[in-house]
Length: 189
Image (cartoon, rainbow, N blue to C red; front, side, top):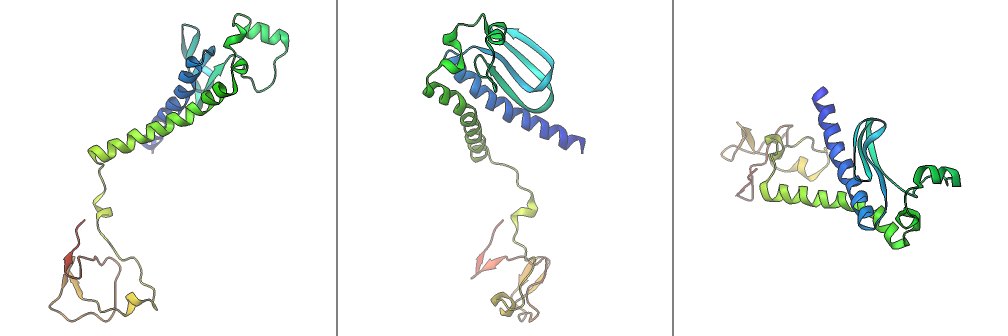
């Protein structure tokens, strides 16, 4: 159980990191001042300021955020704005960028998740993925009583193989039966 929780948090962490990295890189490319890049929500556990940005890890592992100058949920008063971003030139504020630049910054997060998905599928397609053996065989779970399958001739199954030397079984398909051949073509995994 603990292993599943740890794996879930690691996968979520990768998804959040890639998403927020998209916003971060786009903001930097557009010349926006990025005050904080955070994985996890506050309170802040650990962090380091490198350049103009505070890179940190928050206590709650339920997401992350990129805090940019001029991108607040509620408008700041002049005093709050001066106190928070007084050292940041107005041309580096998110709200002072063109609509196209702001859209690019906002779309970059989901776009990075799509790029990640592409590379994951590329890796699976290139290197393969382990599939449990139980998924490689066809099993009959249920046959509806009035369906064509219920009235079809069924051959005896022994050790997982269809025995064509015996007469068809009139009872129909049974749970656990496997289809091994269709029209004398052998079915493989």
